[in-house]
Image (tube, rainbow over all chains, first blue to last red; front, top):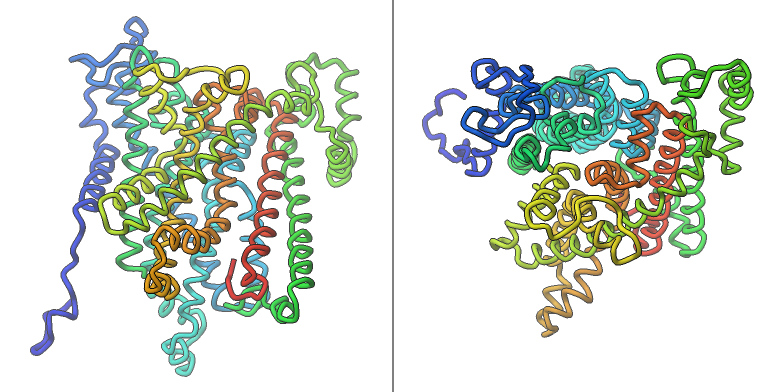
Length: 280
Length: 338
């Protein structure tokens, strides 16, 4: 924004007040992101180094969060696990919304046969129990982490398309659209230059909410032993691999489980806040 | 479809003359949509045999000895020599007659394996649904009634927590806290007899309920807040009706209509959550059966449970839509977009 002109009151742009909860949530996400980027520097130990003679031990001064069945350092595995916890959900949320934005814009603005076709597809996808489909398809097709990510992108696209479409429908009757049409601006330009910026806040809020949902779903697949490759440090996968050592080293389960909740809660809080603040 | 006009618009006009015909039309249309959906899903489930990597015969053979007679029997049973769509036709006909094929583990009929496992899943789901509806509506109503207080904020926060934490994560925490540390509940097995089973399934039911409950709390709270601001509530207060009567006789009743719409989400949440919870607590239910079948690449069993789960979700959604139309006449007039 430029310097306010003389006579312009301060009311035009109120300072953005961020609630303390949202700040904490943002801090947590930043922490997770730092772990994902600087994993090698932060982790006290290699997450892959096996000490079969040591086995699963409770927290000690050497291994703050103890070790797992193969004697691997749990804390290091949790720190490295931030990578798959962030990358996959980011791709799912961004990918699903990229496709959904295109479909929703076209469907909402053009209407007609295209709209009907896209909406029938959305209705069909809505009839499916998403987590079950993800489990069965990833389980039967096989393939690793990226298969799971791809399946989730496809499954997430339908509800996201509906969100974008209804946002477009809200914009359509507004005068600026009529004005743009009267000026003879092309449909593509109206869609991407005029409508898209107006619905961008809604999309952004839902991208953040989608991230949380994708994180939970990907972790769920890893927990069932699907998707992620064995041995990869991943929070969901850790719950799968360590489920039998709840008595000897509970931290090996509780720490990754806590990280899943903490990250998802933070993202949901930020998403809800963005939605309340910018999209209403 | 014309943009914002809801698709039920066409039945709206006929609905004004009388409730009878339009309700019939609505239900018939709704059923007519469900049948192609069921067919599409069954086609997807059927296609799993061919989606699975490798030769379908191998997938269907599993660990059994691959002598020519067995291979020929499998080819004949699944009509693998026929075109794809013909195979689907044969398969669908068998499914309709109640034959879901034979599991590759131990040569048992998939239907009889499912029958063995169904009890635990039904018990768990019913228990969770009771919790979700009972506690969820109660918490949502309390939050709305005490709007802006600490209690309200605590309940809203609990809702965010519930939506964010999947059933298996909640399950692990409950298992550790109440099973391992406090020894209040058993940590393994489904139990025998009604009370013992309820005892064994308490933690799983809560783990499953918490994540789904959040949706119900959120919707009930929003609907109640909207309802509490309406003129009739002010009027009832002005007339001196007790707040308990206003709350239970009018506000809660009207607020439950949006909750009914969420029933579809609740059912999907319970069904999908049951899979995770059964694995977390090692319960011998349908969900655990599905995951076990996936790990052993037992395609016929996967097909059976997947078909059952998805058909169930679809039929419940159909039932909910019909119930919704009956309790809220506005739907028939096309004033509320479902």
